[in-house]
Image (tube, rainbow, N blue to C red; front, side, top):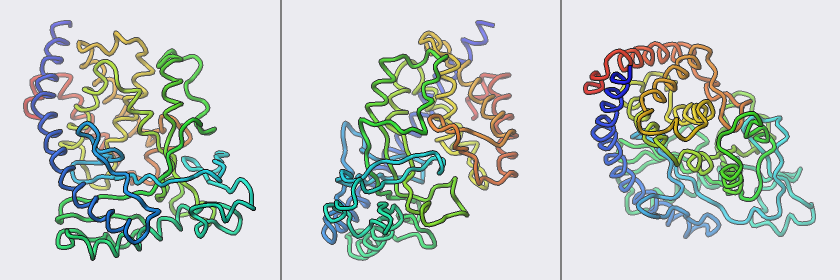
Length: 359
């Protein structure tokens, strides 16, 4: 048993050093290329409208606010200034979303975003995005990369297609630090020892982001209040939770397996699903020794089996917002196909560690 485990860990480390590192290097190269174009477009936007200041900056070889959805798809979060005169309201009526309401009607004129405030005093995510989309469309025509970049039509999101190969979504957002959403108040569960009080305090202080994007839990029932709502995002908090042990290595292997074998019609699985299930696995195995390098195989198998279970039940709850189902709106047939393919993958890895050489 121990010999089999050791063999799997050896093969996984080899897989990580070869496949995962190659994926990482290729994505890093793509990000540089993509960020050059996006920075140029945003510079042009800023000239027209100084309220949309580019926050895309490189820190320690990482681009702040850049999320990798898949090797050809990215999201750039553009942080906006001055949320000051608004109250953050999340009463749970819009799963995964919250609204920003004027703290005092008399302060309307003091807001930097006055023309995007609705009659009932909400700062409209949709109105801000609509204005931003117009500015980006104009900037694309003017920027120095205009031959290789164009807007993706038929969406209210701000999406660029670069060199006909990459798609980048630019999402206006507010950073919220020092507060924690009511809809995530159940975290951490009192009976689960992970991640421990110090890390919890750090994560909560890190806060979350409010994004102006279409919320998939609301698709098809967009009333005006809902299209004014902002989507909650916890990427910094999640990254902080995954810092120790072999967690990041485990995520890297999961992402590589997904990119190579689970990129299926209907897009049932994204890297974010992998990250979510890894966080749940951390709760199931709360001791740091469970995340020692020698346990990498066990943790990976645990996550793949949990993934199959979620796909079969057609439900994958968001880690911080369990009322939000990350499979909502995904075609059932796509989830079924993904369950079968994940099962094939898990069985192959479990029964023959050497198969990783071919995966």
